[in-house]
Length: 303
Image 1 (cartoon, one colour):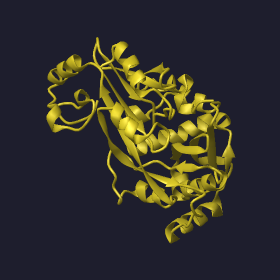
Image 2: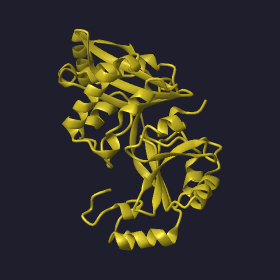
Image 3: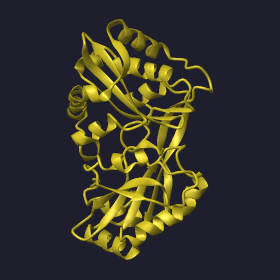
Image 4: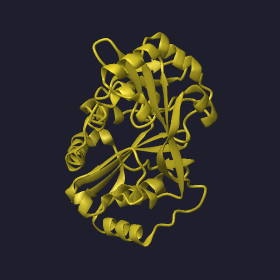
């Protein structure tokens, strides 16, 4: 069995990002994106790309190059890939991305702050939390996630088609927890698990869920449920930077006993077309570390 994020079935549900393509040398799936009428590039699946530790990195890049793609960009966590030194050797654009907040059950018991203890107690006074069958709650989950989209003005990458959730509901390795109040689902957290490595996938609440601190109780439940895991990865903060004052970062840090860096790995597969695209889109590649640079528009926004 391969990681759920590596399957073509999972990648095919991410049509909001691109079209699924399986790379045999990496034993994982990536996404094909249109650049213009004649050019395409590659991006990893949401939220991370999982590549086997013994994967042929160069072989995969050659495979994509021969297929005619312009570039490739992938997000890696700290654990699910070949060594960092091998990634650095394979990908010409390679740099730390942002910190992920990790709970390692075997390292030390979780010690919550006074704030987190208060929020968990508050939630459990009014809510019932449990592992749920996502398939039975698809419509309720979509309502919760629609609330998240409106609350945070999410676009593009984070607005998934309905089939994404349908596939998650029966994909091996996907586990979901829900918080209930008066028989109504007010919060839900979806996780991906493989070989003892657990990664936070999506979480959402309605207004009642926020008012009752449901997310605190669900993370506490996850720590209890996955107590034999090697790693529980709560992910990083929102956006592209690490801001220790960010509320989401403070929330996730409170459930962690370790931090681990995630990485970006990119490569130019067709240098001639890459340079032509920079000229076409008016991007000066020497003044940005964004990759691929042609997706950074003239006004500084990201396509």
